[in-house]
Each structure stands twice: as C-alpha cells, then as structure tokens.
Image (cartoon, rainbow, N blue to C red; front, side, top):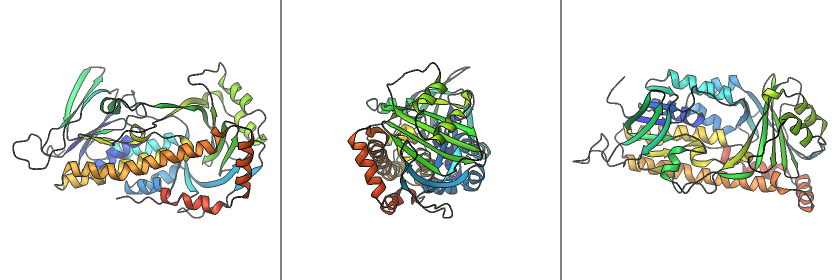
Length: 408
C-alpha cells in the first residue's frame, strides 16, 4: 500500500459509507471504514433502487452485481383500503430508464454487494466494533501553501474512536460522516440539527412468496399507508406506515399489525397473516427537518442519512446515499488527488448535493401530507377523487429530474 496516498476515515459502514469507500479507492485514496457494530450488516427489509441509484451503482462498477441480487419491477399505482384503484399506472418494466421502473432489493443484499466491493478494493480497511466519539474537523487549506502543515495545506482532520482494546485517534485528510440519522459526527459539528419524529411508525417485513403481484402497489388510508413489492422471484416486501405516538410498544406486534389492517383488502390481510413473527420489525420514523446548513465542515463531509435523512415516502433514501458515495470520490477525492484545491472540491460537493437532497426531502414531506398523513374525512374523499380523475402522465413526468440524475 502506498504510504503517500491521501487518506480518509469513513464513519459508518452502511450503504452511504461503503459506497464512499469504494469511490475513494477508485480515486486512488486509502479509506478506513469505522463501523460501530461488531459486524457489518443491514436489517432485512426491502428497498427500491430507482434509475438514479442504478446510475450511481454503474459509476461504482456494481450495477451488474446488484441487478443479479434484485428484482426488476415497476409501480402499479395507488389503491384505497378496500382494494379499489385510485390510479393505475401502465407497466414500464420493459423500459429500465422509465420513472416508474426500479429494482426491488433486500437491503441486506445491496449491502452485501457494497461490502464485498469495499473489501476487495485496494486501499480500503474495514474495522468493526469501532465507535466514533469525537471529530476534529481540520481546515481544508490550499495545496502548496508555504508554512502550513499537512500534505494539502491547512490542518488535517482527526477522528477518535473506541474499540474493545481502548481509545484510538488518527489524523486524516478527509472525514466522511456516514453514521446515520443520529450521526455522532453531525451532532458535534451542527449540534442544533437533531432528528425529529415524523409522527409515524412503520412495520416492515420480507417473506417467502412467489405468487403475489410483483409490482409496487401503494394503498392510502386514514393516517396509514400500506405498500408491497417483489424483491426477488421468491420474496415479497411489505410495509405498513401509520400515525402513532413516539416510542409506543405493542406486546404482540404481529397481532397488532393484523388488527390495524383487519378491514383492509384481502390481499393485504393475506400478506400480513403469512408473515412469520421473526420477520416482522417496526421502527419509529425520524427525519432531519430542517437539515444542516451545509454538508461540509472543515475537512468533514456529510453523506446519507447523516446529511439528509428524509421521510420514506419518496423512496429515495438508498439512491441518494449511493449518489453521495459516488460524489465523494468524483467531486472531492479525484480532483484533490490531481492537485486541486480541497476547499473548492468540498464546496463543489455541497453545491451539488445539498440543493438536490433538500428538494427531495421537501417532496417527501409533501407526499406524506397528501398521502398517509392526510387522515380521514372530506380531505381524503377529495384526494381520492382527484387521483381517480388525474392522468398518470404529468405525475410521472414530475419525477424525471430525480431519476435522471447523472454521475459527475
């Protein structure tokens, strides 16, 4: 390994962190990934990787492996709780560039592909059981500035982390914060920015099934949304997102889910009833509202949920995390390694990522207000009527700028 290579410490070994590590290695940097858990892993839930996410994966050279791990499908439309269609969307599965076409995936399989790529990359070190506790952001400086320390000028960043054998501190040229919505790194740099409870919680499950409709169906009821899609030839993923007090606990989660959706369409009740208890999980939903005023601070760059945790209603969490990872390598690491100014590279990253991700976060809130958060009564009746009357075309066109993202 070349000791003269620029270095990065990536805090967090999820989707954003591993994507950033692979991208940094592609740009010729050394990257150390610190994962707090004793092993790298992900929860066994489903996700949709839309066209922009697949573009990011292609930039990392991983689109083929991820396609092999998932199920190409598309959006069927929206129903009411009885199963009546509010809006039907023609199938676009044959066109992978279409707004409504996406890859259904088990999160664990996407994570496994990224983990394997990071482990195989030249210059990436993976460390588990490493809890980051402090960060010194440093200053970017200017290359070649006389009398300033560090290969790039300015002051290097530093990260302190704890492991089973004690405390460790290392200086580095760049810190990538990829430690999720409750980011320790972000909390130190932007202490006023805290996760906020959305007002909703969500059941999620992946179960064995080869017969159900594979396209994504979303069902909107009073204060509740249900959705399902295929994530492999033999597996279905479903979620039940509903308004609920923060931190509430059910003594029997499967029974509570069956009761919550007990009067909904038969296909919904069947999916829930077929879900083994050990496959069902529920998490309160948090987001950053507002997000941080910048995605960079000193030599630290924020990625994924640490930067822009959004409501799940826009389905862009994984895709934007992958975009961030690519941009760390292409907008920061590559130009700096070529002799460019780090401050300018960090500014370019912030300018490319923050406006886009903030817009997507606002869109997610708007979708929630129009969908699951709307509640019952006349507003829901009006919403449903509008959906039945509206053509699908304009709605699909509105999503084109999101999925049409191009890697820098």
